Image (cartoon, rainbow, N blue to C red):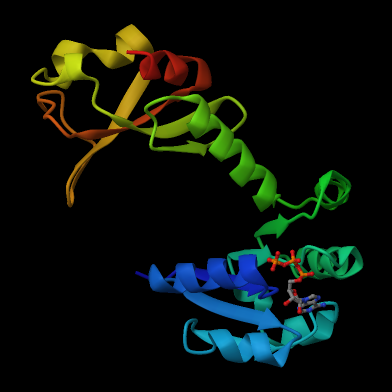
Length: 217
Ligand code: ATP
C-alpha cells in the first residue's frame, strides 16, 4: 500500500512536532521551513527536509507539493506568510489543507480562503484540559466536532463482569465503545460478548451530552 504523504510547512514547536510524529507513525513527510537551523534539526526525523520560502509558488511547485494529499501549514505569527502559503497550496490543488491559526481573526481569514481545517492548538489544548478537569474520571478527551467526542473512561465499577451485550450501552446511553485497553493490550472494536474486566479503559464515542452522562456512572 502506498504510504500517505504529508507536507508540513513551518517547523516551529507545533510544525516540527506534527512532522516528526507523522514520520514516526510511518507516513512520508516533506518538511519545509525558511530557517535552515530548524530544517537541519528535523532532517533525520522526517523523509525529507528542505529550506524554502513557502510564499513562493514556483518553489513549492518545483518541490512537487501538488502531489501531496495533505498539507499542514504551521506558520502562526506571520499572518501574511500563512495566507500566501495557503493560497499557493490551494492554487496548486493540494486536496486537503490544514492550517494553524494564531487567533480568531486569523481563523476567519483562513476559512474564507477555503482551508479544510483550521486549528488553534493553544485553544484546543486549553479546552481539552478544562474538560478533563471538569469531569472527575476521564483520562483523555478528543473533540471530533462541536457535538461529538471520544473519551478514555476507566470502566465504571458497576460494569465490571458484564458483557457489552448485557450493558447495551448504545441503546441505553447512546454511546459506542470502540476499543478497550488494559495494560499493554488494546482490543479494537470489541464484540458484543466482550466481558469488562477490572482495570479496563473504555474508549467511548458519542455526542457530548451522552458522554457526560457516562462519566457520572
Ligand atoms: P510555534 O509552533 O513554535 O508556536 P508559531 O505559531 O509562533 O510557532 P512562527 O514561529 O511564526 O509560528 O512560524 C513557525 C515557523 O514557520 C518558523 O520556524 C518560521 O521560520 C516558519 N516560516 C514562517 N514563514 C515562512 C515561510 N514563508 N516559508 C517557510 N517557513 C516559514
